[in-house]
Length: 391
Image (tube, rainbow, N blue to C red; front, side, top):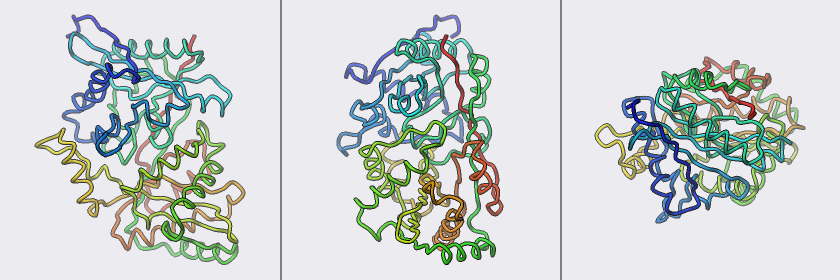
């Protein structure tokens, strides 16, 4: 195969004629990870949409992301065989928030071949430079505020949880040899929740509630519209100074919460009020990847995978703490401990065995202490966000 010339095909998501190439783009990861037991992809319609169900895919131009971002796609082929892919995008909201000119690459996949990697990233870098960018960062998959950023560099032995990146171990060397440098690491812990309740966690939780006048509500104690607005305000306040964070637009966040209704478990969402003001929320999402594992006898049966996930979701054993935030003025009060205590009570009642506590930046000392202090927690995955200046 190496004797055949390498072609890089660039296309957009704006032209209906490119739909066939977009399908090849999505199909490639199925071929690439065909024999990898840890590979658990999202359903294809998450990327390409499903008009009959009114679902907009991540890559479709109707995606709200493209109201403030532009993207192009690249396929690497030798002859008729796809050997790699990536996209490149400029998120204007990111650059406005951080005052820089950083472009991104994502959805990166390649055979273990430096020539393929170099050609793909050269094409992405050239396009980003033509857009006025001065650096290329990634890999960053869509959706930007839900998918864990970076390259998986530790934790290949276990399957990913929902919206966690999974990739081949060889990618770290391929990107290093291309000239990418690590600018930040992101950590994740797996925490057993079926252990007996720690006396200290319960004692501290009760003390915080009494001392600060804390009240706790679950998801359905207020109307959905009110909940969404509350969550947006807390989320953007809590994450505002987090490295690389791009504030949600109101429309994006509301759409995200609406989409989440299909898989969420309302008892895993807690809203913490201090003297009547919402101070924090903690939201766990069942790890549907457990039920999306490709079927051995029909790997690409998307409707069967979706049906299996919906009909057997009561067998899910873990959840991801994917939505959480404490308003800055309420930090250091111990509210995170209160939420962990209450959520552990609920998760034990429902028979959950573990939770994933992740997407923690390596220099976020306070949250790292929380992850490390959880009973029997173990560092399960580490991701590396990489960057290269565009000369």
